[in-house]
Image 1 (cartoon, one colour):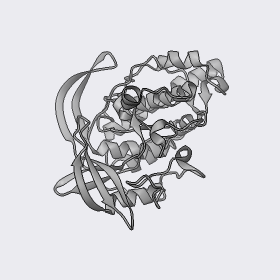
Image 2 (cartoon, one colour):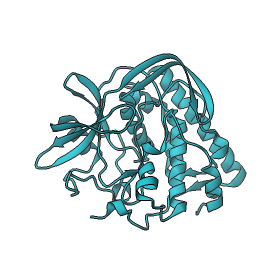
Image 3 (tube, helix red, strand yellow):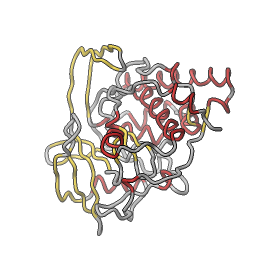
Image 4 (spheres, one colour):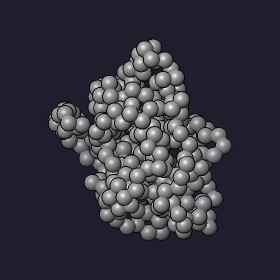
Amino acid sequence: MRLGKLSCVAVLGVVITVWCQNTEAQQVDTAGVLPEAAGERFEGYLFLDIDGNSLPIQSDDEIEHFLREAEIVEISALGSGITLPRKVLLQGDGFRAYAVFKDVDIKRHKVTERINGRNHFSLDWHDWHGYDVAAYILDRLLGMDRVPPAVSRQIGNDPGSIRIWLEKAVTENERASTHDVLPPDSQRWNQQRLIMQVFDNLVANRDSNLGNLLIDRNWRAWFIDCSRCFGNTKSMYYPLENIGFCERGMWKGLKNLDAAAVTEHLSPYLGKAQIKALLKRRDTIVRHFEELIAERGEETVLYDVEPATATAPWGHN
């Protein structure tokens, strides 16, 4: 099924913004738990070393192990991001790759902030590195493969999260300002932005912005910087009435998202109230699309993302 471009543009009239909350970092072994995509993963994306060559490791398990155990060769300021992340050069068995380390842990009480044009109040506000790992785990439980692998790791005296660096990828801001090139397939791009909007509502993303959307060389969208997600709110930050379609795989993942599995895999990062709020938001999203499907039909509401048809200029060797 193909989404009409006018419908997509109307749906994408929503401004994206958000994220938040709770607990001590713990290491979680996701081996054998998170689903591994069959065949080519990530629409052909391969993780690369610092020279742009394919890494000899590509599975989630391998990347997670590398992030936890690889030797730290060099650490430098990233130069962007309000949470002051650092770029880390890691060395494995005969190869080197970059990663991003974040140790932000800021708590505030009684915070009112502007999100998507409206004021939202939080009794307990938390910007925390562990939510990056929680977002990655949730992404894999949903079968999305849109959040790069991230794990907990302490560097020196600083506990934090570390995620693999996506080589030959730019932010949406960089795509528009530095490269000044439009996506070659606006329909495919709009379809991916829709996935981001649904995910932002699911994780209660307080800080969704164009600098947190990465685009790889296959024009595939990746979601990063989730340290301001997962608050206790049960509300939607981005009105669901403006989101009229859902990617088919994500829809299946949302419906099958099991409370027991969420609790088991996310409890090291989320408190009970946060998990309860997450599941409540999931229920609201599922109910919204169920109503749309009942009204308009499944083939009208659900879609499959169009395949890539071009390589981005920043993907050329």
